[in-house]
Length: 317
Image (cartoon, rainbow, N blue to C red; front, top):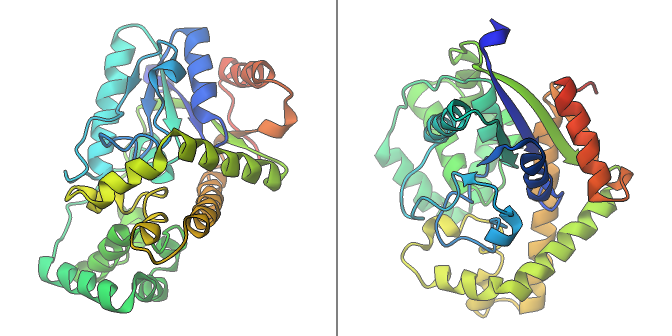
């Protein structure tokens, strides 16, 4: 029954759209706690590149599922959903509401739609073969092969996300079914959440891109180069090398490109990532969209978000 479902508020959207700031203000206004929905903020030490909220940004609002995992530890979407459900239940039993905040669409959809993950088939020999091919032929070759058999899965993956590309190919190799087919066949029990979701966007795409460019400049001033270099030199850097903000700077450390070239590439890749994030969230008709360039102040944006939350509205696009 709908009445027995756990209320959940979600603030999602592309990088640099102001998700963290809005979520914190919502939490302060209604006495809620934040639960991260970001696939990279879960890792320890990866602070600047992932725009992990610092204590001054949290403003005393408790944040869950941030910085708890070593970069060399394995993690999965299924594990994220398990931990997020536990965090939300803990918050709820204490009489508070949870505000899910982040930009990882796969984490968001898997959690709020209550996807039940099928047992995984693994073929380590095949996996290692694909890794070696990526080293010699390049990841784009593998992404093209995935696109030939599973275009939907390939369309939401970046060429630098080698782990997920290999996993999707491995699923097809071991089961004869694409990852998209498996997702469609996954058993979906009714969701335990009554979710009111808000996605931040911008009507003027350049408005968002300017914010992204400025965000990168701020990260560099905050020490992004030093953070990236530490992971570049660390044996724990394998996961970090997949994160936007690190891998684009590695050619500089290898003396293959100038720093300015790497910074421009980082800004471009971040803009492309934002576009993919929006593509994901726009597919969900239950999400309410708020356009940040419609509002002259954060207070106005907060009031608009709280009106949606009070109505428990479902977005219409």
